[in-house]
Image 1 (cartoon, rainbow, N blue to C red):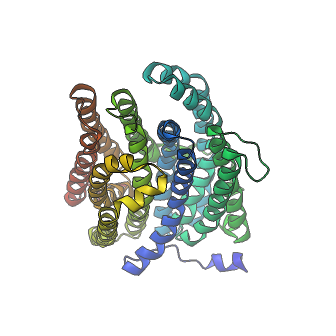
Image 2: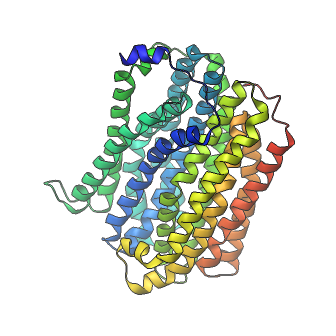
Amino acid sequence: MATSGLQDLDLRMDISRKHILQLALPISAAILVPQVNYITNNIFLSWLGKEELGAAGITGVFYLVFGTIGYGLNNGLQALIARRAGENRPEEIGKLFSQAVRIALIIAAIGIIITWFLAPLIFRNVLNNEGNISRVISFLKIRIWGLPFLYIYQMRNALLVGTNQSRYLVIGTLAETITNIVLDYGLIFGNLGLPQLGFNGAAYASVIAEATGMFVVLGVIHVKGISKRFHIYTNFRFDKKNAKLLLVQSAPLIFQYAISLMSWEFFFILVERNAQYSYDLAISNMMRNIFGFFGVFTWAFAATSSTMVSNIIGQKRHDEVQTLIMKIVQISTGLSIVVCIILNVFPESILSIFGQDQQFISHAIPVLRIVSLAMVLMSFSTVWLNAVVGTGNSKINLMIEAVTVVLYSVYVYVVLEKLKLAITWAWGSEWLYWTSMFIPSFLYLRSGRWRGKII
Protein backbone atom coordinates (compact mmCIF):
# COMPACT_ATOMS: atom_id res chain seq x y z
CA MET A 1 0.00 0.00 0.00
CA ALA A 2 2.79 2.41 0.91
CA THR A 3 4.52 1.74 -2.39
CA SER A 4 1.43 2.32 -4.49
CA GLY A 5 0.74 5.57 -2.63
CA LEU A 6 4.15 6.83 -3.57
CA GLN A 7 3.51 6.22 -7.24
CA ASP A 8 1.08 9.15 -7.26
CA LEU A 9 3.25 11.40 -5.08
CA ASP A 10 3.47 14.96 -6.40
CA LEU A 11 7.07 16.09 -5.83
CA ARG A 12 6.44 19.73 -6.72
CA MET A 13 6.21 22.31 -3.93
CA ASP A 14 4.28 25.53 -3.42
CA ILE A 15 5.43 28.64 -1.54
CA SER A 16 2.73 28.91 1.13
CA ARG A 17 3.73 29.42 4.77
CA LYS A 18 1.88 26.19 5.60
CA HIS A 19 4.07 24.26 3.17
CA ILE A 20 7.20 25.96 4.54
CA LEU A 21 6.33 24.83 8.06
CA GLN A 22 5.37 21.32 6.93
CA LEU A 23 8.84 20.94 5.44
CA ALA A 24 10.84 22.83 8.08
CA LEU A 25 9.49 21.37 11.33
CA PRO A 26 10.49 17.72 10.65
CA ILE A 27 13.88 19.00 9.45
CA SER A 28 14.18 20.80 12.80
CA ALA A 29 13.68 17.49 14.58
CA ALA A 30 16.34 15.84 12.41
CA ILE A 31 18.86 18.64 13.00
CA LEU A 32 18.03 18.64 16.69
CA VAL A 33 19.25 15.06 17.12
CA PRO A 34 23.01 15.59 16.70
CA GLN A 35 22.68 18.72 18.83
CA VAL A 36 20.84 16.81 21.57
CA ASN A 37 23.49 14.08 21.39
CA TYR A 38 26.28 16.65 21.63
CA ILE A 39 24.61 18.50 24.51
CA THR A 40 23.81 15.25 26.33
CA ASN A 41 27.46 14.22 26.07
CA ASN A 42 28.54 17.60 27.43
CA ILE A 43 26.07 17.63 30.33
CA PHE A 44 27.23 14.19 31.45
CA LEU A 45 30.89 15.06 30.88
CA SER A 46 30.50 18.31 32.86
CA TRP A 47 29.77 16.11 35.88
CA LEU A 48 33.29 14.73 35.51
CA GLY A 49 34.81 18.24 35.76
CA LYS A 50 35.57 21.52 33.96
CA GLU A 51 38.60 20.08 32.15
CA GLU A 52 36.49 17.33 30.62
CA LEU A 53 33.84 19.86 29.60
CA GLY A 54 36.52 22.04 27.97
CA ALA A 55 38.12 19.11 26.15
CA ALA A 56 34.68 18.09 24.85
CA GLY A 57 34.51 21.43 23.05
CA ILE A 58 37.67 20.67 21.08
CA THR A 59 36.67 17.09 20.23
CA GLY A 60 33.14 18.13 19.35
CA VAL A 61 34.19 20.81 16.90
CA PHE A 62 36.83 18.53 15.33
CA TYR A 63 34.23 15.85 14.63
CA LEU A 64 31.79 18.45 13.38
CA VAL A 65 34.37 19.52 10.78
CA PHE A 66 34.01 16.08 9.19
CA GLY A 67 30.29 16.02 9.95
CA THR A 68 29.76 19.24 8.01
CA ILE A 69 31.73 17.85 5.06
CA GLY A 70 28.96 15.28 4.87
CA TYR A 71 26.46 18.07 5.40
CA GLY A 72 27.91 19.85 2.37
CA LEU A 73 27.47 16.69 0.29
CA ASN A 74 23.97 16.36 1.74
CA ASN A 75 23.03 19.90 0.72
CA GLY A 76 24.39 19.46 -2.79
CA LEU A 77 22.46 16.21 -3.16
CA GLN A 78 19.36 17.77 -1.64
CA ALA A 79 19.40 20.67 -4.12
CA LEU A 80 19.79 18.25 -7.04
CA ILE A 81 17.03 15.94 -5.81
CA ALA A 82 14.72 18.91 -5.24
CA ARG A 83 15.46 20.18 -8.75
CA ARG A 84 14.65 16.76 -10.27
CA ALA A 85 11.50 16.64 -8.14
CA GLY A 86 10.46 20.08 -9.41
CA GLU A 87 11.11 18.87 -12.96
CA ASN A 88 9.04 15.73 -12.17
CA ARG A 89 11.93 13.37 -13.03
CA PRO A 90 11.82 10.84 -10.16
CA GLU A 91 13.80 8.22 -12.13
CA GLU A 92 16.95 10.36 -11.69
CA ILE A 93 16.68 10.62 -7.90
CA GLY A 94 17.87 7.09 -7.06
CA LYS A 95 20.89 7.48 -9.36
CA LEU A 96 21.96 10.65 -7.54
CA PHE A 97 21.43 9.09 -4.11
CA SER A 98 23.52 6.02 -4.92
CA GLN A 99 26.47 8.08 -6.17
CA ALA A 100 26.26 10.26 -3.06
CA VAL A 101 26.55 7.20 -0.79
CA ARG A 102 29.61 5.98 -2.71
CA ILE A 103 31.32 9.37 -2.42
CA ALA A 104 30.37 9.74 1.26
CA LEU A 105 31.95 6.41 2.21
CA ILE A 106 35.20 7.37 0.48
CA ILE A 107 35.29 10.68 2.39
CA ALA A 108 34.57 8.81 5.64
CA ALA A 109 37.57 6.53 5.05
CA ILE A 110 39.79 9.57 4.48
CA GLY A 111 38.47 11.19 7.67
CA ILE A 112 39.29 8.09 9.72
CA ILE A 113 42.85 7.94 8.36
CA ILE A 114 43.44 11.66 9.04
CA THR A 115 42.12 11.37 12.59
CA TRP A 116 44.29 8.37 13.45
CA PHE A 117 47.56 9.53 11.93
CA LEU A 118 47.53 13.31 11.46
CA ALA A 119 45.30 14.73 14.19
CA PRO A 120 47.54 13.55 17.08
CA LEU A 121 50.48 15.46 15.58
CA ILE A 122 48.37 18.61 15.24
CA PHE A 123 46.96 18.58 18.76
CA ARG A 124 50.34 17.85 20.37
CA ASN A 125 51.68 21.00 18.76
CA VAL A 126 48.78 23.42 19.32
CA LEU A 127 47.41 22.52 22.77
CA ASN A 128 49.17 23.46 26.00
CA ASN A 129 47.49 21.25 28.60
CA GLU A 130 48.96 17.74 28.55
CA GLY A 131 45.80 16.27 30.06
CA ASN A 132 43.68 17.82 27.30
CA ILE A 133 46.03 16.44 24.63
CA SER A 134 45.67 12.83 25.78
CA ARG A 135 41.91 13.14 26.32
CA VAL A 136 41.29 14.68 22.90
CA ILE A 137 43.39 12.17 20.95
CA SER A 138 42.01 9.10 22.73
CA PHE A 139 38.41 10.28 22.34
CA LEU A 140 38.67 11.14 18.65
CA LYS A 141 40.23 7.80 17.69
CA ILE A 142 37.00 6.20 18.92
CA ARG A 143 34.51 8.89 17.88
CA ILE A 144 35.62 9.06 14.24
CA TRP A 145 34.29 5.54 13.56
CA GLY A 146 30.79 6.99 13.62
CA LEU A 147 31.52 8.93 10.43
CA PRO A 148 30.31 6.31 7.87
CA PHE A 149 27.01 5.93 9.76
CA LEU A 150 26.59 9.70 10.03
CA TYR A 151 27.19 10.24 6.31
CA ILE A 152 24.66 7.64 5.17
CA TYR A 153 22.23 9.13 7.70
CA GLN A 154 22.78 12.57 6.11
CA MET A 155 22.22 11.23 2.59
CA ARG A 156 18.91 9.87 3.84
CA ASN A 157 18.02 13.41 4.97
CA ALA A 158 18.67 14.73 1.47
CA LEU A 159 16.47 12.04 -0.09
CA LEU A 160 13.51 12.62 2.22
CA VAL A 161 13.69 16.42 2.28
CA GLY A 162 14.38 16.74 -1.44
CA THR A 163 11.31 14.60 -2.26
CA ASN A 164 9.04 16.50 0.16
CA GLN A 165 8.81 13.64 2.70
CA SER A 166 10.56 15.25 5.66
CA ARG A 167 7.93 13.88 8.08
CA TYR A 168 9.76 10.54 8.07
CA LEU A 169 12.94 12.14 9.48
CA VAL A 170 11.60 12.03 13.02
CA ILE A 171 11.62 8.22 13.39
CA GLY A 172 15.37 7.78 12.94
CA THR A 173 16.14 10.83 15.04
CA LEU A 174 14.21 9.50 18.02
CA ALA A 175 16.00 6.14 17.84
CA GLU A 176 19.40 7.83 17.75
CA THR A 177 18.63 10.25 20.59
CA ILE A 178 17.28 7.63 22.97
CA THR A 179 20.22 5.31 22.27
CA ASN A 180 22.74 8.07 22.89
CA ILE A 181 21.22 9.24 26.18
CA VAL A 182 20.94 5.71 27.59
CA LEU A 183 24.48 4.73 26.58
CA ASP A 184 25.96 8.02 27.82
CA TYR A 185 24.45 7.36 31.23
CA GLY A 186 25.67 3.78 31.18
CA LEU A 187 29.14 4.00 29.64
CA ILE A 188 30.42 7.25 31.17
CA PHE A 189 29.55 6.34 34.76
CA GLY A 190 29.33 2.54 34.64
CA ASN A 191 25.55 2.36 35.15
CA LEU A 192 23.02 -0.18 33.76
CA GLY A 193 25.57 -2.97 34.10
CA LEU A 194 27.90 -1.39 31.51
CA PRO A 195 31.64 -0.74 31.97
CA GLN A 196 32.70 2.65 33.38
CA LEU A 197 34.66 4.31 30.55
CA GLY A 198 34.60 7.94 31.70
CA PHE A 199 35.34 10.55 29.02
CA ASN A 200 35.67 7.93 26.25
CA GLY A 201 32.28 6.46 27.16
CA ALA A 202 30.63 9.40 25.38
CA ALA A 203 32.53 8.53 22.20
CA TYR A 204 31.36 4.91 22.19
CA ALA A 205 27.78 6.00 22.97
CA SER A 206 27.71 8.44 20.04
CA VAL A 207 29.08 5.93 17.53
CA ILE A 208 26.53 3.27 18.51
CA ALA A 209 23.72 5.87 18.44
CA GLU A 210 24.65 7.01 14.92
CA ALA A 211 24.67 3.41 13.71
CA THR A 212 21.25 2.85 15.29
CA GLY A 213 19.80 5.95 13.63
CA MET A 214 21.15 4.91 10.25
CA PHE A 215 19.72 1.38 10.36
CA VAL A 216 16.34 2.57 11.62
CA VAL A 217 15.92 5.15 8.88
CA LEU A 218 17.02 2.72 6.16
CA GLY A 219 14.31 0.44 7.49
CA VAL A 220 11.75 3.25 7.26
CA ILE A 221 12.75 4.00 3.66
CA HIS A 222 12.29 0.32 2.80
CA VAL A 223 8.97 -0.17 4.63
CA LYS A 224 7.42 3.00 3.18
CA GLY A 225 8.31 1.92 -0.35
CA ILE A 226 10.59 4.91 -0.93
CA SER A 227 13.56 2.77 -1.90
CA LYS A 228 11.48 0.96 -4.54
CA ARG A 229 9.88 4.14 -5.91
CA PHE A 230 13.26 5.79 -6.55
CA HIS A 231 15.23 2.58 -7.30
CA ILE A 232 17.62 3.25 -4.42
CA TYR A 233 19.22 -0.21 -4.44
CA THR A 234 19.46 -0.75 -8.20
CA ASN A 235 21.81 2.08 -9.18
CA PHE A 236 24.95 1.46 -7.14
CA ARG A 237 27.17 1.03 -10.18
CA PHE A 238 29.56 3.90 -10.74
CA ASP A 239 27.78 6.55 -12.81
CA LYS A 240 30.32 9.07 -14.10
CA LYS A 241 27.75 11.64 -15.21
CA ASN A 242 25.83 11.83 -11.94
CA ALA A 243 28.95 11.46 -9.79
CA LYS A 244 30.54 14.40 -11.59
CA LEU A 245 27.35 16.47 -11.32
CA LEU A 246 27.13 15.75 -7.60
CA LEU A 247 30.78 16.63 -6.99
CA VAL A 248 30.55 19.85 -9.01
CA GLN A 249 27.49 20.89 -7.01
CA SER A 250 28.70 19.67 -3.60
CA ALA A 251 32.47 20.30 -3.61
CA PRO A 252 32.16 24.06 -3.03
CA LEU A 253 29.66 23.39 -0.23
CA ILE A 254 31.94 20.77 1.34
CA PHE A 255 34.84 23.22 1.36
CA GLN A 256 32.51 25.97 2.58
CA TYR A 257 31.29 24.05 5.62
CA ALA A 258 34.72 22.57 6.33
CA ILE A 259 36.50 25.93 6.47
CA SER A 260 33.63 27.32 8.52
CA LEU A 261 34.05 24.64 11.20
CA MET A 262 37.85 24.77 11.00
CA SER A 263 37.61 28.45 11.87
CA TRP A 264 35.59 27.42 14.93
CA GLU A 265 38.26 24.87 15.88
CA PHE A 266 40.80 27.68 15.46
CA PHE A 267 38.68 29.74 17.85
CA PHE A 268 38.64 26.98 20.50
CA ILE A 269 42.39 26.43 20.22
CA LEU A 270 43.04 30.16 20.73
CA VAL A 271 40.74 30.17 23.77
CA GLU A 272 42.66 27.19 25.22
CA ARG A 273 45.98 28.96 24.64
CA ASN A 274 44.94 32.39 25.95
CA ALA A 275 42.22 31.77 28.52
CA GLN A 276 42.17 34.45 31.24
CA TYR A 277 40.28 32.08 33.54
CA SER A 278 40.44 28.30 33.89
CA TYR A 279 36.80 28.00 32.82
CA ASP A 280 36.96 30.13 29.64
CA LEU A 281 37.23 27.05 27.43
CA ALA A 282 34.33 25.37 29.24
CA ILE A 283 32.21 28.52 28.88
CA SER A 284 32.95 28.63 25.16
CA ASN A 285 31.95 24.98 24.83
CA MET A 286 28.73 25.77 26.70
CA MET A 287 27.99 28.58 24.23
CA ARG A 288 28.59 26.14 21.38
CA ASN A 289 25.97 23.86 22.95
CA ILE A 290 23.44 26.67 23.33
CA PHE A 291 24.13 27.97 19.82
CA GLY A 292 23.62 24.47 18.44
CA PHE A 293 20.47 23.65 20.38
CA PHE A 294 18.56 26.90 19.87
CA GLY A 295 19.83 27.29 16.32
CA VAL A 296 18.10 24.15 15.04
CA PHE A 297 15.05 26.05 13.80
CA THR A 298 17.23 28.51 11.92
CA TRP A 299 19.18 25.71 10.24
CA ALA A 300 15.93 23.92 9.44
CA PHE A 301 14.57 26.99 7.68
CA ALA A 302 17.92 27.36 5.90
CA ALA A 303 17.63 23.78 4.59
CA THR A 304 14.01 24.51 3.65
CA SER A 305 15.17 27.59 1.75
CA SER A 306 17.69 25.58 -0.29
CA THR A 307 15.21 22.81 -1.12
CA MET A 308 12.21 24.97 -1.94
CA VAL A 309 14.19 27.47 -4.03
CA SER A 310 15.63 24.62 -6.10
CA ASN A 311 12.20 22.99 -6.49
CA ILE A 312 10.52 26.25 -7.51
CA ILE A 313 13.23 26.98 -10.07
CA GLY A 314 12.76 23.45 -11.42
CA GLN A 315 9.11 24.40 -12.00
CA LYS A 316 10.26 27.52 -13.96
CA ARG A 317 8.74 29.83 -11.32
CA HIS A 318 11.80 32.09 -11.06
CA ASP A 319 9.81 35.24 -10.28
CA GLU A 320 8.52 33.73 -7.03
CA VAL A 321 11.96 32.94 -5.53
CA GLN A 322 12.44 36.19 -3.60
CA THR A 323 8.86 36.09 -2.31
CA LEU A 324 9.53 32.58 -1.02
CA ILE A 325 12.79 33.63 0.67
CA MET A 326 11.12 36.55 2.45
CA LYS A 327 8.37 34.28 3.81
CA ILE A 328 10.99 31.89 5.20
CA VAL A 329 13.02 34.78 6.67
CA GLN A 330 9.96 36.18 8.45
CA ILE A 331 9.24 32.87 10.19
CA SER A 332 12.89 32.09 10.97
CA THR A 333 13.70 35.54 12.38
CA GLY A 334 10.46 35.69 14.36
CA LEU A 335 11.29 32.42 16.14
CA SER A 336 14.87 33.53 16.72
CA ILE A 337 13.76 36.77 18.38
CA VAL A 338 11.60 34.73 20.77
CA VAL A 339 14.60 32.53 21.61
CA CYS A 340 16.78 35.61 22.13
CA ILE A 341 14.29 37.04 24.62
CA ILE A 342 14.09 33.74 26.53
CA LEU A 343 17.88 33.48 26.75
CA ASN A 344 18.21 37.03 28.07
CA VAL A 345 15.32 36.82 30.55
CA PHE A 346 16.30 33.43 32.03
CA PRO A 347 20.11 33.17 31.57
CA GLU A 348 20.88 31.63 34.96
CA SER A 349 18.23 28.93 34.65
CA ILE A 350 19.52 27.90 31.23
CA LEU A 351 23.20 27.93 32.21
CA SER A 352 22.56 26.01 35.43
CA ILE A 353 21.70 22.93 33.34
CA PHE A 354 25.44 22.30 32.97
CA GLY A 355 25.86 21.94 36.73
CA GLN A 356 28.56 24.57 37.31
CA ASP A 357 28.98 26.99 40.23
CA GLN A 358 27.66 30.56 40.50
CA GLN A 359 31.02 32.17 39.65
CA PHE A 360 31.12 30.18 36.41
CA ILE A 361 27.56 31.21 35.54
CA SER A 362 28.26 34.89 36.29
CA HIS A 363 31.16 34.93 33.83
CA ALA A 364 29.07 33.08 31.23
CA ILE A 365 26.05 35.41 31.23
CA PRO A 366 27.68 38.32 29.28
CA VAL A 367 28.86 35.83 26.66
CA LEU A 368 25.35 34.38 26.43
CA ARG A 369 23.92 37.82 25.69
CA ILE A 370 26.39 38.28 22.82
CA VAL A 371 25.53 34.83 21.45
CA SER A 372 21.76 35.37 21.68
CA LEU A 373 21.96 38.48 19.49
CA ALA A 374 24.23 36.66 17.05
CA MET A 375 21.51 34.02 16.68
CA VAL A 376 19.09 36.69 15.43
CA LEU A 377 21.63 37.73 12.79
CA MET A 378 22.10 34.07 11.85
CA SER A 379 18.34 33.51 11.50
CA PHE A 380 18.07 35.54 8.30
CA SER A 381 21.68 35.40 7.05
CA THR A 382 21.76 31.62 6.71
CA VAL A 383 18.37 31.54 4.94
CA TRP A 384 19.68 33.89 2.24
CA LEU A 385 22.96 31.96 2.01
CA ASN A 386 21.18 28.63 1.55
CA ALA A 387 18.88 30.15 -1.02
CA VAL A 388 22.04 30.67 -3.08
CA VAL A 389 22.64 26.90 -2.74
CA GLY A 390 19.15 26.33 -4.13
CA THR A 391 19.95 28.33 -7.26
CA GLY A 392 22.68 25.76 -8.05
CA ASN A 393 25.60 28.19 -7.96
CA SER A 394 27.45 26.70 -5.00
CA LYS A 395 30.72 28.35 -6.05
CA ILE A 396 29.23 31.66 -4.92
CA ASN A 397 28.60 30.11 -1.49
CA LEU A 398 32.23 29.05 -1.25
CA MET A 399 33.44 32.53 -2.17
CA ILE A 400 31.18 34.13 0.43
CA GLU A 401 32.26 31.67 3.11
CA ALA A 402 35.97 32.05 2.30
CA VAL A 403 35.90 35.85 2.64
CA THR A 404 33.81 35.64 5.81
CA VAL A 405 36.09 33.07 7.45
CA VAL A 406 39.18 35.17 6.74
CA LEU A 407 37.57 38.19 8.40
CA TYR A 408 36.41 36.04 11.32
CA SER A 409 39.81 34.38 11.84
CA VAL A 410 41.70 37.66 11.73
CA TYR A 411 39.31 39.13 14.28
CA VAL A 412 39.61 36.28 16.81
CA TYR A 413 43.40 36.10 16.35
CA VAL A 414 43.82 39.80 17.08
CA VAL A 415 41.36 39.77 19.99
CA LEU A 416 42.69 36.63 21.72
CA GLU A 417 46.31 36.19 20.63
CA LYS A 418 47.43 39.81 20.30
CA LEU A 419 45.18 41.97 22.48
CA LYS A 420 44.48 39.24 25.08
CA LEU A 421 40.90 40.43 25.56
CA ALA A 422 38.15 38.58 27.41
CA ILE A 423 36.18 35.86 25.63
CA THR A 424 33.13 38.16 25.58
CA TRP A 425 34.97 40.18 22.93
CA ALA A 426 36.04 37.00 21.16
CA TRP A 427 32.42 35.82 20.82
CA GLY A 428 31.62 39.19 19.23
CA SER A 429 33.18 37.57 16.15
CA GLU A 430 29.79 35.92 15.54
CA TRP A 431 28.28 39.33 14.78
CA LEU A 432 30.98 39.95 12.20
CA TYR A 433 30.57 36.45 10.77
CA TRP A 434 26.83 36.53 10.12
CA THR A 435 26.79 40.12 8.86
CA SER A 436 29.57 39.32 6.38
CA MET A 437 27.58 36.25 5.31
CA PHE A 438 24.32 38.09 4.75
CA ILE A 439 25.37 41.08 2.65
CA PRO A 440 26.86 39.28 -0.41
CA SER A 441 24.15 36.56 -0.35
CA PHE A 442 21.41 39.18 -0.38
CA LEU A 443 23.07 41.22 -3.14
CA TYR A 444 23.65 38.14 -5.33
CA LEU A 445 20.04 36.97 -5.15
CA ARG A 446 18.67 40.47 -5.72
CA SER A 447 20.92 40.84 -8.80
CA GLY A 448 19.14 38.00 -10.65
CA ARG A 449 22.45 36.61 -12.00
CA TRP A 450 21.38 33.12 -10.89
CA ARG A 451 18.44 32.88 -13.34
CA GLY A 452 20.40 31.24 -16.16
CA LYS A 453 22.05 28.55 -13.97
CA ILE A 454 21.19 24.97 -15.00
CA ILE A 455 21.99 21.88 -12.89
